Structures are given as structure tokens and as C-alpha cells.
Length: 388
Image 1 (tube, helix red, strand yellow):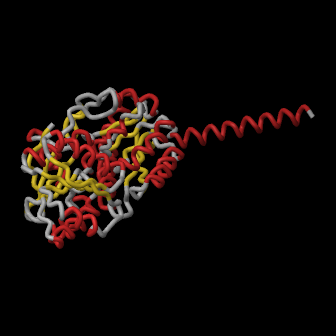
Image 2 (spheres, rainbow, N blue to C red; image 1 turned 90 degrees about the horizontal axis):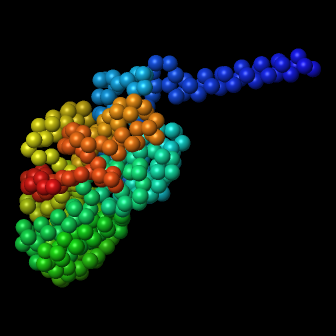
Image 3 (cartoon, one colour; image 1 turned 180 degrees about the vertical axis):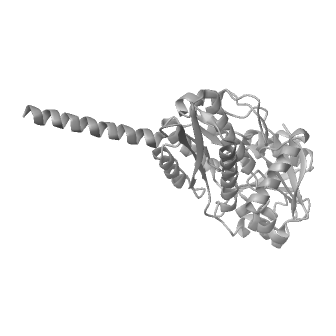
């Protein structure tokens, strides 16, 4: 009996050693390890072109990191991008977030929309996973008290307010109509735009709303036409703004059309067709580089187009920088453990990316974030100014 007990103990010890060996190998035993970076964006649905743009920016950064080689904690690192689709839907966004947590990723880049980024952020925070959003602009994202949230672009307070003042002070509009798509992003940027208009002495003559999947705006636009506004602002994405512009033309609405970064894309001209006249649409990208950073950004755009056969839509450069910044924080901490590199990420100051100088404030927001004001001429975006 005693011999049987001893044999059983030996067998149990052997199984335990095998289990430990499996765990070590999965974590990257020996001299190499795989570091998994999660990315989430809408790669299906109406704004899939924007989600794929973001994902490609991440893949480009991963490939460059692996080509350059990096050693962290004495081990050679291979980075891997785990990409999930949230379809710009909050429920699918939280499911994607939980999937990445269960996959034990080392950090997350995303989401694209504020409406998916905000609910997902609590899941990452509970799992103590650093999250860098390259494009979510609703102020709430970084005002929840989460030490795991970071943002690489200016928020809606700056973006919407600047556009509101621009409508009155520069475009010389006096009356303004506002439409939003009822998402966290669309409603948030429209609210801030309205505040900017009011502060500059403009008058709001209509506030309407639609949804982010709508295609027929005739009732809303007919009502707005009767109020003859100088400017129509839309808080939402280009997939909705394009058809809206077509219907504005059909109804004979000649107001200037404005929107935030959601409409400020390379794809808007194709979506709007003949509804997009020169110097009719004005928008702002939450980001941008001044003259000193133009060469680096131009090279990124050229390399991106050569690699993927497509122009940068909006935020691929910010995803690219986010991936590389996360890897840099791991290098500074000499660890890929989120608990160990998170403090280094929070201390980021003066990191030079293709999108400019990156430093975070105490909330995880980028300091001195840039805005790029644009219009469309000849079916192409044309930069008016970069402001901070």
C-alpha cells in the first residue's frame, strides 16, 4: 500500500512538471516569446473601410517591429496582432473586448468609435489591460477614473467647439442646423459644436437626429430647408453623411455642410457623389501634423499606399503609433506584463511618432492635441490649417 502511495505521488509530481512546462512554453519559454496586441475596429458594416484602415495601420507597425527585432526581459520578442471586428456596435464591442481578455493579450489598441470604446474600456480596466484608442473622441472615455485608458487624439470638446466657432467666425454663418446620429460620438461632437456656435454669437435654428444606419433624410432635410440655415452640421460618420449630401443637393439646400472627423475621410467623395461641391464641406480631423512633421507623415502615407493599395482614410497613422508606443513602454519597463509596463505607458512624454509628439496627461489624454481643418476640392481633401 505504501509503495502504491509513493508511486501515485511520483506520478502526480510528473504531471505537475509537464503542466508547468506547457504553461512556460505557452508564455514563451526559452529565449523567445510571443507578445499579443489586440486590435478592435469595425471591419464589417457601413464603416468597414475605416475599421480596415485602422487595422492595416496596426499590422504595418507589427511587421516593422518584428523586422527590427526587440529584446524584452532577456527574451527575443515576436509581436502578433489579434484583430477583432466590433461592427461599430456596442454589444459586439464588449464581446470582442472579453474575447481579447480571454486570449490573454498583453494590451489593446482600439476601438475606433466612442460608442464601442467606452463600454469596452471597463472590461479592459477590470482585467488591468492598457488600452490606447487612436480615434475615440468622446470626452467620457478618459474621464471615468480608469488608469488603463489612453487617447492619441484631441477630444470632442476641442474638436466640436473649434468647428462651431469656425462656422461663425470664419465661414460667416449666422444660423445653424444640427443633426446627429444618436451615437456617443455623433451626439457628443454635435453638442460641443452647438456650444461653439453659441459662444461665437451664432443662432441654432434646428436640432434633429437620425441613426447611424439611416439612408433616407428627406423629412429631416425638408424641415431644415424651411429654416434656411447658413450651415448644416452632422455629427456622425461618412457612410451616413454621403447620402445626406446627395439628398441636400436634390432638395436645393445650399448651406455649408460641416462635420467632425467621422466624415473627414478619403472615402467621402465617393459616398457623396455629385452632392459634394468644392468648398462646400468643412470638417476637422482630430489630429494632424504641422510643417515639421509633414515629411514623416507623407512617407507613412506613401508606404501605406504601396503596401495596401489604398489611401489612408483617417486614423491608420494613429494606430501605427499606438502599437509602437505600447511596444516602447514595454521596452522601457523591460517587461511585457501589463501591470509592469502600464506605469511606463502613463509616463510617456516626448515620444516622437509619425503623428507628432506624444505625451499623456493625468487622465491619459494626449497633451496639446492637434486638429486639422479641411475642405474638399476636386474630390480630394484639402488642408486649411493645423491648430492646437
